[in-house]
Image (tube, rainbow, N blue to C red; front, side):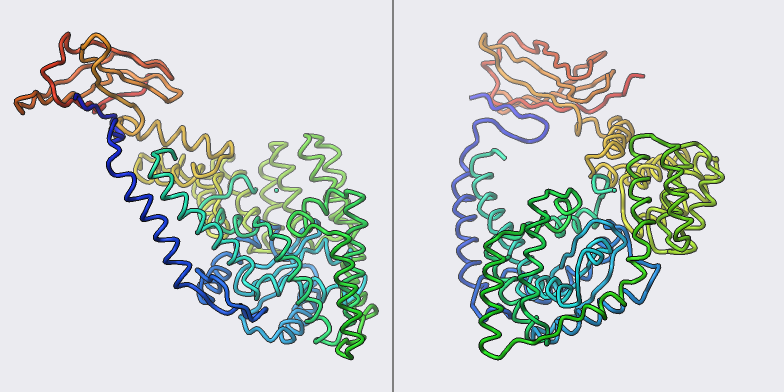
Length: 532
């Protein structure tokens, strides 16, 4: 039987290795389930634990900063707000009895949201704080998120993925089938994956139950957990878009949760275990600056929407209104820089980014924007420095693509390829452009990665060669090496050249009229160039 092979190494007719791998995948899952059990620190129950506490803490620490960057960065105008949230958070963490290296931050986003990473790393958005009524409700939010972190909910979601991957690995091998969110790459994409996990009903119910107990243990009125959920249900019925894209995306409210929280609060009160603290006056005092600045943030949010629609005059009026109301807010100056860059007023845009960076030197978007403005002014050295700084804070396809273009212009093809390949991990427009650039540089050096060649015996017994160009560029001078082995074990080697292959085209040629004397044949593309 004549065996044929594509250059990717997938050999036809070879099924002998499939069943052992499938059995290996099943055995691996069984071994994991038998050996990886631990006690859940919140519930006290034994459960499968593929991700250790140490690994959870490491994951939280690795992804905490990138997660903050992609959610708007830290809120800077009133550091007292973050100090206050940290104080309430530490009080709830102590009441939980679960020791982790907890951290609490306030993020500079109008989207009402809160989240927890494995290992005790938590965040609350500025937009959620202005929607809460009192300190007890803030404590209810934080208690709920502490349970998600301490109760291994994020780790459990990861473990379910690991088990599914282990099972699918056996099946797949056994059957041979196998505002910047879109531009994130590398570690930032991993952090986004952790943030985008959706908790199941059991995890939400557990977070409500134990979070309400922590609320009571810390001295707060546990009924705040019920009133908080009542507010969430009302808002969800109104389908407020900011809530739907924020807290409700990962924590869907329900009347069932309201009833459960109310029932538990009443039980805790009856048992004398409930605190009575609400803390409304203290809460209002702590977030007074946020309340006062609400019109400024509302104007900036509208300006951002107008900018996205290319309503530049409207956007400029709104962002200047925001700056007039609260000039210390760095995002307003950064937004003005984005607007001015879109107007191609690059020098003024740089000044606006400078103002943003002076107020917050740790947010990636200001460096990215300033780098783009400097590139358009022809200042390559300073632009590169800004792009480098931006990717250290948050790796994006935009920055890597720009750095790749600079490296290519300087003749450093190897570095350009590395940068383009980093950018190409994103499915964004920048990522697609980077993939095209990487292919353009790499195809002449490694044509076999992109162009597929194969030999086979056709229905008439002839040996035929097919070459496929799956790329979106025309290629020329395509050279294919063919190796054959006859029935007496004699090997032969030769080449065929194709002058031109159009994008997506496949061409076939007859190599031998009678292939009956061959026992094996294979082919691979060894040379090609991109046609301009």
